Image (cartoon, rainbow, N blue to C red; front, side, top):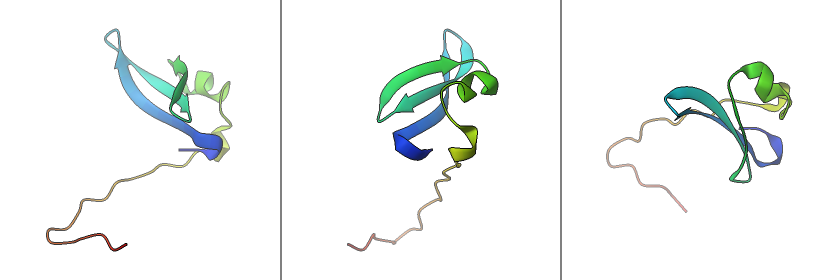
Length: 62
């Protein structure tokens, strides 16, 4: 994830893994390298989002 609604996710396209760059949910580019991603996004603005497993019996508050 990055600033300005940027998201970079790995996907398989035509049998090949690419890095999909999206902004606010809209496709920007499918890139075959990190260097290509850098043409669309400042890599320093990206951070990894890790989903943690939910605990049984835990309910969100709010």
